[in-house]
Image 1 (cartoon, rainbow, N blue to C red):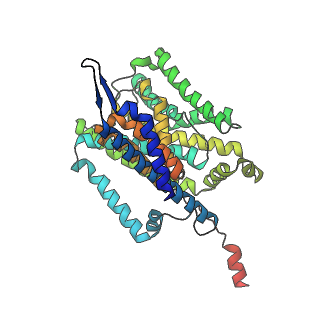
Image 2: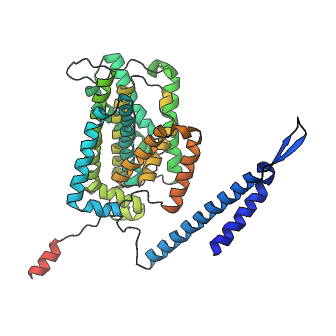
Image 3: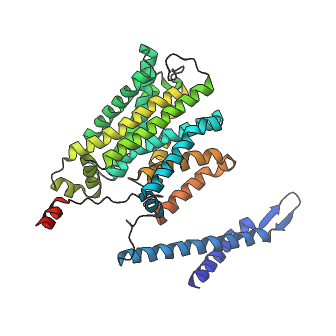
Length: 407
């Protein structure tokens, strides 16, 4: 009842504020006034419903927080998806069904759909790479697209000047990305929070400005065209065949990224990243090398961006600095935050939502940024842990337990 009264008050206040704009329409040519009472009715009803839903969601969130504090419920409680995936039989069937779907995708849908899916898979790899830096190590990076640009330009320039092919440049792009990750990581070892965000933002801007203005090196705003597509034993492929081939390369790269990042997450260095994210001072006090941990996070995160940058250049066959703006970094960071920081499955789902939905909802393209901003605000308020939150791993040393049982 309290929510209804408050929502009614908010609705009346909005009616009062928007009355001149929504109701009164003056026709100066005919010198008449038109009263549009239905508009104010819809405004009132709409605001009342939104306000009621908003207050109901806030009340439910507070109830969940109180239940969590009292020990009845917890933020680390596995979600329904986690519970389902814990079942080996369901997990195996889900993986096999998903693999079957992605393998037959290019043969069921047309080239346009395959191209869109390749773009989504590129952002999946970028999101998983940034998930190492931001999600696991807790190092905010607003210039991640710079490593993406390094990989793309490494392939484009090596192909243009020396004729190196895609498969030769793929590991080189990863190496260049990792090298630039270390170059960025060294000066900012002791920075955190807002200062770290500003420095990484500046790094991304510097790379873009260099690419735009150093024309002798990067061909400036004109970019580099006629970049070779990936080859397959010298076979000549048309656009559709080449798109299908790149699609399968991206599938392999996504699987490789999932396996490597999953293994890293549960490795010694992965636990060090998580400790660094939780409390840097306590992490250093426990004897973890902060410099090596941070540099490894930046380098490994940047490796994937450099590698997928090579594939991006091969897919588009043309790159210029306009492809690597701050907006790309914001989207990649949004993928990690929306999906769930540290969660591999969440990042994949976040990439699919943020990249595929704008393509399939082009009818609402004018409102895309408005919907995008509103969705992010709602996520931060009601589900800050992301769509699929990362479950905290628990490690148990069974050696002492077994010894005590034997005694």
